[in-house]
Image 1 (cartoon, helix red, strand yellow):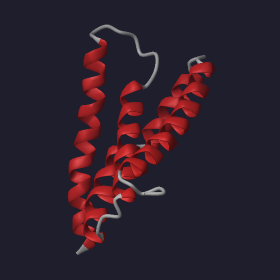
Image 2 (cartoon, rainbow, N blue to C red):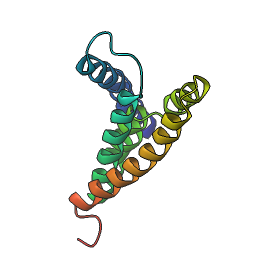
Image 3 (cartoon, rainbow, N blue to C red):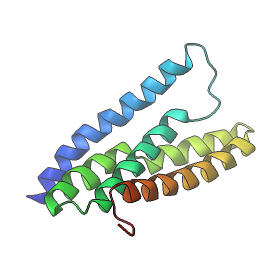
Image 4 (tube, one colour):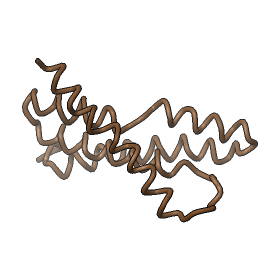
Length: 124
């Protein structure tokens, strides 16, 4: 039955990722040229923070399956991050591609650690 919880969480997380990306693009305004993949970056950091909170709070296995594996798994996206980084590099924006990799790694790790700390998971 765990697979059903994962599927339900994923069914919420995937549209949430899409809506996050659209909201960030709307915030940037119409006609703003694509420079940096802020939508994917935002979704990945938000998912990492939530995963840290869930892990730090030591939630039950069913809640972990629903929210951590399902929701966070679908909200965050390694494939889109990889594709957008490749597109930056292919279009001559190697610096932005490298910045995306470094910023995503550092911010993602920072967010998961912060989330766990906020939930009392480290030294708490």
